[in-house]
Length: 177
Image (cartoon, rainbow, N blue to C red):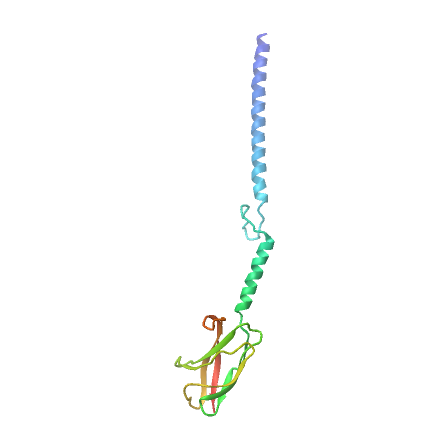
């Protein structure tokens, strides 16, 4: 019987070792499953970066509505320009040139003209309604014969006629014959 007692003891030790091995294998498998699940949530982007598994995504419909609203707001700020890039004069102060507030625009506008070499304001229009135009204008000083480079500033104004909604600067060559 001493050997059978020893065998029982060995069997118990072997059984305990088998249970411990089983538990270790189970723990390793659970860890592999848990961590490989997180990795599968990430998608390769091709440059070594992966998508973050904890990133929060908004509702796609809400995102599309927000993008549409941004495009609509951006369209409001756009300004269609209709103009000639040269104005001509025989006397140095009375110029002919087509300058318009395009029908595509949604705001009234006024224009300010500056000489490039001195930055001096030489003309300021009154409000021009959407679809309106100037075909001639008179500047505040008389220019000598030749070409004079200037900057024309288109200013769209809100309904209060004071708040500038958008502004665009364009070059205008003043030609005095």
